[in-house]
Image (cartoon, rainbow, N blue to C red; front, top):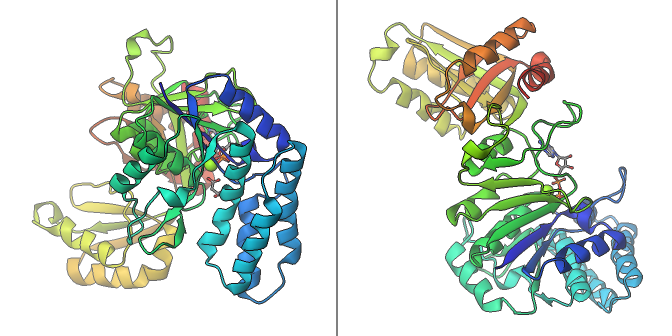
Length: 438
Ligand code: ADP
Ligand code: ASP
Ligand code: MG
């Protein structure tokens, strides 16, 4: 058995969190691969190490001294080392980094050092080997991961003692360090688990699993016990930001179970994520919603034209206009002679008039309308599939509570029901769904 564990920023925040990590790792001899984030916040109002590193880079760029920020970074890591009585040469490492900074360092390389220092310290503490991400995690020039080469390299580097890997970054074909987008250590963990054909990928964070709704909107939401990769993809795409949205792809390819756990409450089983479940043995069989997620600030462009449904190629022409403007269409609810394109307002704003002008030109529509301030709310659940009456219940509850549904989308897999509501109804719609069906 092999378990790959990833510890997020809050689990790496200070020496007492390191001690929790150590006791979790040592509780199970199969836990032999540990991926770590940079030190996160110790309390609200504290700084994440990665944010401090971004700040250092901005100072360098504008020729302003970053000495005091650099000192804060050194102090955080030196305190962990000293409290745990480790030997890691933080002074030497920081001195080398400072020299590099004076010569000119890329933003990606500088911000990756938070994970690098965390991994060195954790390897020292656990007595595991330190394996730098730049030795195995290889990107292609287009920014995608070269999985074949990366997996082969990590297999070579695996040691029977166990290894600690820094998350968040890898190396480009030209030898330069490149990071994922923020929160990317989750992806490193998933890639390591896939590379080594792990039996499970445990992602250790500061909540006891994925909650059924955003805790800032619903008070004390229940953690989800079991969720499929597909459901999670829907939820994380729409804002349930516990995991980086790209985390599931490597583990799904190899059908490796993903288990979200709480470093501060290790006895809690957390959330288990798998390809499918036998729901017959599920005591909560009757609950058809797995989770609720959503995002605000979408715009809906509606193109209506008499006879459009019989016009071959009409949708292609419309979609080409969006493609030309590099605009991602999130949903496209349609009627007989109209179709609506749901896009984020942020991506639409810079090219709004250019898109409208082109749609006028290629479609000659009867009407062309744009509505802003739309929020998308999705009820996601594998148990909704082929069950009659679910959408009726959802719409009835929203209606009873005075929430006007502006758009409706449901895929044929019946994994979700997605509604567009006014931004002002966003939180209420999520609360109504939660309180009515959970
Ligand atoms: P880490 O540093 O371990 O990667 P993150 O801060 O990236 O942790 O993710 C965990 C946080 O995600 C939680 O502390 C919580 O505030 C937030 N969060 C947002 N939506 C949800 C949700 N649906 N379920 C659980 N946590 C959520
Ligand atoms: N430290 C990086 C960030 O804050 C990566 C991570 O924590 O996953 O985005
Ligand atoms: Mg995270």
